[in-house]
Length: 151
Image 1 (cartoon, rainbow, N blue to C red):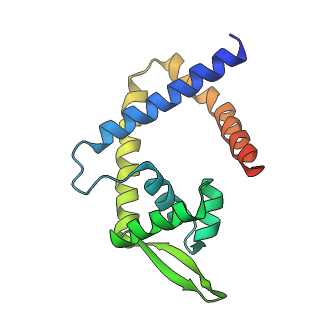
Image 2: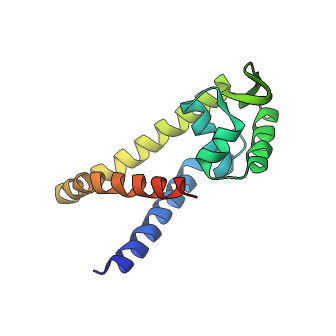
């Protein structure tokens, strides 16, 4: 298969898998649904508590004002805390609330259970193939991330 076809097929498949995961995981949610960019920001802040808004914008490849809007929404909803940066009073540091951390952990747990159950239904050959593909997928993700750093 040509790399162009492979790239298109892989991109379409990854988007489709992500969409199906979100749809399945949204069933039974009691809290209001979060948009994709809100979740990305929450995940980043959970992984790097104390990150500045400007650094979050750079990491997420979003405009600063877009991230500020997301921050305002998440602060309003009780999922983020915004604190002044002691080193620069004009900047804000972001921290997840316990509610946000619990929500992300619950989502991740449910996602892990769902994917683990589906992988278990695959043949041994398919599980071996998926395991063998993981290093290449990681390198693909790293390449996409590095390419974005040049923007």
